[in-house]
Image (cartoon, rainbow, N blue to C red; front, side, top):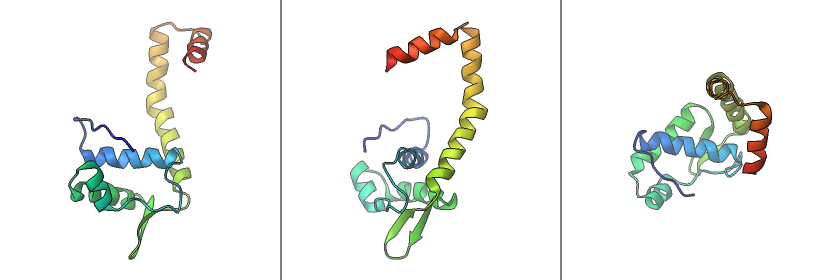
Length: 120
């Protein structure tokens, strides 16, 4: 996993978002263990407290669960909950902004469709 840290947001938030993305993309599956705090800290040269904060956020939001002596595991149903949450956010926040920009630029459906085909 290659991560490029953005200077605008705290690293623990970015790490949290990366883990969410990896769960949604199927790179981390339900029931699978997250890498240990030590492993992630060593791999990315981060303070273990930073990793622990990101992991704690995942626990607080009930996407992962701690199994005593084993570590943190992605909970069953977490991917579905995350997908619904991401869809809701996209439709309520991002999509209206995209529609406004499409309208402002006077783009037609055929232009958008053509652009979409060219980028594939």
